[in-house]
Amino acid sequence: MKKAIGAVLMLITVLTFSVQHSSAQSGPFSIYLQPAGITGLPGIQAYVWGQHEGKWLVMGGRLDGLHRRQASSAFDVAGNNNRIYVIDPVAGQQWSAPLTALPVALQEQLSATNMQFHQRDTILYCIGGYGYSATAADHITHSNIVAVNVPRVIDAVIGGTSVAPYFRYQTDVRFAVTGGHLEQIYDTWYLLGGNRFDGRYNPMGGPSYTQVYTNEARRFTIADDGTTFTVTHLPYYNDTAAFHRRDYNAVSQILPDGKEGITVFSGVFQLTADIPYLNSVTVDSAGYAINTAFSQYYNHYHSAVMPVYSAAAHEMHNVFFGGIAQYYDNAGTLTEDNNVPFVKTIARVTRDAAGTMTEYKLPVEMPGLLGASAEFIPAEGIPAYHNHVLKLDDITADTTLAGYIFGGISSTAPNIFTTNTGTQSSAYSQLIKVYLVKNSSTTQADALNPQSTGTLRLQLYPNPSDGNIYLKFNSGTATHATLTVADVNGRVISRREYRTLAAGDNLIRYAIEEPTPDGTYVITLTTPEASSTQRIVIKK
Image 1 (cartoon, rainbow, N blue to C red):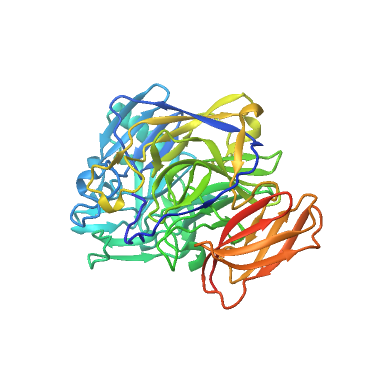
Image 2 (spheres, one colour; image 1 turned 30 degrees about the vertical axis):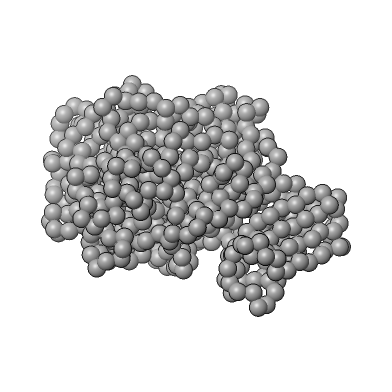
């Protein structure tokens, strides 16, 4: 489960603050969901998948729900997925075979949870993962890279023949990673973030495990002739601020210049607090950059994500489905819960042609507390780039089946971590069809206040800040405004008047007055026409 391996969540009182959504906007598309079932399909979460001609290959992951807190039962071997599944979502059929035909090292790894994986053409590459190893007589992070011939394995499972000839692997300690992501930009592979976790999980920080974050984007190439494959390691990107995170979403991108990239969204845990990151990191073929001007408030842990790009508008859209998050919408109020609950939220993060990222809460939710450790699997034949990003402009029908959400964790309540005995959640066994709708009359979404609020369209950055804050906004026809800074208890610590604004777009710099301690503050900007309130974290 991508929740809290090797860390304890802080239990902090829920804090709420007002959110003013912008007027409903005409968006590029909307979505609707339709549950579907396949008889006999087990629930699986935190698995790996590949696809060929409409059939899915599913391996690894857990057959139970959120991992338990007791070290003796967390990541119990009984919850391992020890079978290879083939699923035909259109025909509603499934087949399976045990892992027993494979070498023991592969049996152990391919029944693990949170492997990193990515499919290139017909080969699915799987790296690392965490689980019990009878060979080691302990829970370990595996150190193999495995190459799987997807169509051949699918045929073997359906036909009841041996799958063993279609698996190849190498051992490399640099691949002993779990909770990260494996992605590709052109011919370069990226093993992003994650950690090495060895020993029995113990949320109370006991001596039963060791945990080391990679703090890296590990770069390499793979030369594969179908018989043998060779890994050549390239210089790594080592950056604690960017890559000290796990259990996040890494999503393939088409950037505004039309080139491939990857964006790392959120993840856990911040270096100085046991809460998710709000920032993101964009990686391209030239390097990487932390997006300091953007904060993501919804969908913080690994969840199902649908990436969609419009070449005509140079807009990259990332739709996140449920999962686990520090924030959720409560009747129009953005609510912070540092217990980081399961949520139903579906949100879209859009990068526009100028590179500006904005988060939108969509007016549809998951049908339950679903989506955590699930995957979005594109429908066969949907127009897509080589890196699996959907081509919005080539989807011409009014309503199109874009793909499916499969598996993940189904929770009975938002906050179950501290009381979890294994019955409060389960692995979800159903499919959810995701339809993309291009009818403009139905494509409505609200921009989240912390990124684009009301007619002011207020943006604060950087966030966190060292006390020097930039406010970007549109004052409309107003030429003066009042800026108020308060602490989270509502005590006003500063008020400033701006009487010479330009009508329209403005950028002003504000310095938090000394001696103001580090912490979270509420900033309100008010003009005669509108008002916007946002939070900012000060770390001097």
